[in-house]
Amino acid sequence: MSQEWLNIAIKKINADFNRSADTHLFKANIPSLEGIDIYFKDEAAHPTGSLKHRLARSLFLYALCNGWINEKSTIIEASSGSTAVSEAYFARMIGLKFIAVMPKNTSKEKILKIEFYGGKCHLVDNATQVPAEAEKLSKNKNCHFMDQFTYAERATDWRGNNNIAESIFQQMEQELFPIPTWIVIGAGTGGTSATIGRYIRYQGYNTKVCVVDPENSIFYDYFNGKISEDAQINQSSCIEGIGRPRVEKSFIKNIVDHMIQVPDSASIAAMHFLANEMAYARGPSTGTNLYGVYEIAKKMKKKGERGSIVTLFCDSSSRYLKTYYDSEWIKKNGFQLEPYSTELKKFFS
Image (cartoon, rainbow, N blue to C red; front, side, top):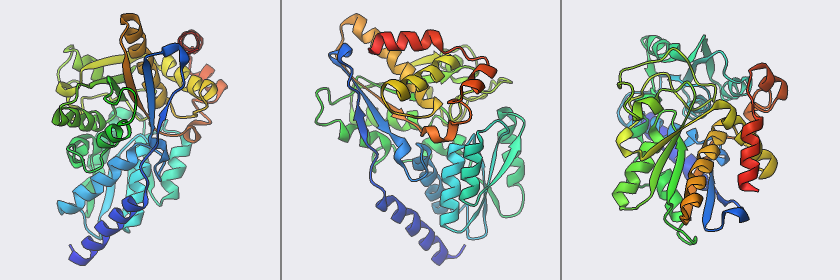
């Protein structure tokens, strides 16, 4: 590897980070929840439009500094979309080719975005085939499998260095309940929950981590001891960006305090509720997060507890206009939003 190329590549990625402002932390105005404050950290504001921008930057720096990639490398990634969009962005930035291996049902908007950044999409029938196909492609000359599902929990410095956890706690410092009672997040790789959970323990905070998991994902049953870490299911999550058919190496269950399994219809209903009632149009994994917040807030209210809950806006609605925001698509796929929409409106009204 050319030392000059390495220095320039790292400098370009760090310069991009230096140009980027931190993401906003919005406070929801919900009078019916007096004593329980809810906050949304808007990760959709990153240059590539999602939470995965942080991860992709960390993965590239990790691979560069480990000597795994050079100026001739082709980057291979297993991704349902958002990580691939962000990795395509960084690959183009430092002049590398990029190939994303993803399921055929990935939204067209995400595929177009990957191609916009110069990447190529290698489609397979379903999510269970993605990792093996990515590993197979990486055997070709000068190819490197970035492998977000293995390295997400270690590529980011969980002790600070402006990671998402440090950012949340700094932005909460002037709030009524500055130390969140709960942080609610989904699990795709498990890297975000690992970073936040480790940071909480490192700093000695009393915040609890709740991971929300969609249907047809293995993390919930693994967390509750129903299956082993080497188990795998032959289904894939309908909620893009989160949920996995196998237990990924980056998912560290010992630093998760609680998990909630969220029905797919509830995730989509919550996504629509957020867009229609709170004017935040975001993606389906954000809906999963919001439904988890609802479950946590409901229990806190019943117990008379006070405190704050923080969750994430994962990506924007623009990637899902022809799917999760399309009424015909929702009907065609058999999702029943009404009962969940009603309970959300009743609780948050």
